[in-house]
Image (cartoon, rainbow, N blue to C red):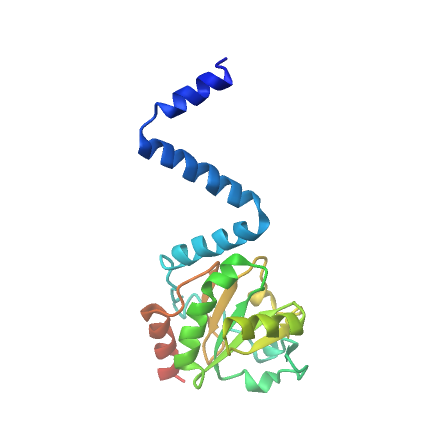
Length: 203
C-alpha cells in the first residue's frame, strides 16, 4: 500500500487541470455533506432539470373526471377562511402540493409565479401545503411571491391523492384532470399556456 508521502508525490505529478478536478470533486462532496449547502445545491440542480420537463395534457377520453362532490377539499386560506367548493366547480384549476422544505418545490416556484402572473385572473391557483401558515407567509414574502397559499387538503379524493411533493394537477372546467405531474416542471412555458388556453377556450 502506498505511503502518504508517495500519494502526495503522485498527486503533485498530475497535470494542473487534473488537480483542479480533484479539488472540485472533494469540495463538492464536502458541500453535499453539510446540510445548508446540500439543500442549495439540490435546489439549483432541480432548477436545471425542470427546464427539461414540460407538462403534458392527457386526452379527455383518458382523463379522470371529478364528480361535483369531489370538490369538497377542506382547504383554507392563510386567514383560516374555508374554500367553498362552489368557487371551484366550473373553473380551470392549477392545484399544486408543495412544502418550503422541499428543494424541487422551491426550484419550480419562480416558474409557477411566472405563469400565475399571466393567468391568475382566469385560472384558479391553489398552492397547498401542510405547513404552519406563518412559516409559509414568511417564505412567500422573503422570496417576493404573491401567489395564494392554502392549507389542509387531507381529505382529497383518490384521484387527487399524492404520495410525494411537488405534485401538480391541472383540472378543466368540466372536472377532467387533464394533467398530473409528479416532480418539478417548467410551468412558465408554452406547453402550460397551450393547456390553459385550450381549457379556457372551452369554458
